[in-house]
Image (cartoon, rainbow, N blue to C red; front, side):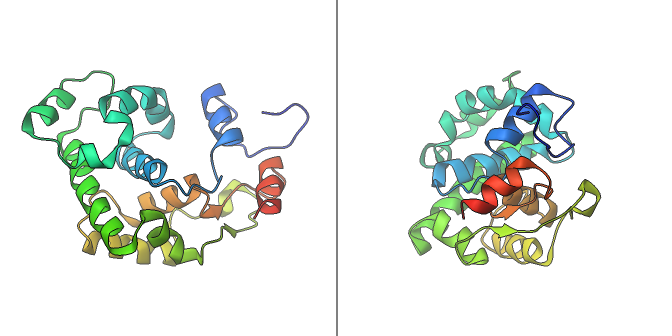
Length: 193
């Protein structure tokens, strides 16, 4: 946390969470590779804490070829087996298979829209939504918009893209600015869009 600045309360208990909050959470992401990284990590986070995922993030980057969706789409059973034996990541067979499925679906979206960025950001008109919540209690776990995106992603063959995961993805990639209004990051991000 920046000295003397007000912040959201959820990350204050851990320096890694605080760094993530201060530098990444809510910052608009337009790189397809980065959008895919968050999609994969959010899927692995299901049922776990985000801190668990953050602590393993570098291991995930190594294990999943730096989230190159072109490479991941071609993973075979041998690669999936090696991932299941990788102690540095979350070893869940369904989530690993889901990451491979999602890479293939991601490529199909890119084929149709040119980039995944074009597709996903079309839901907010290409600009972040600044929600203006005053407390953590006001933050929703999902919204009508995340419901719509989730349904469309599922129709396109994506896995681990329930509405709650999609909303977390929207928060992480800056599609929505859910920093509370007194947080210094809320103002910084709202001023940059």
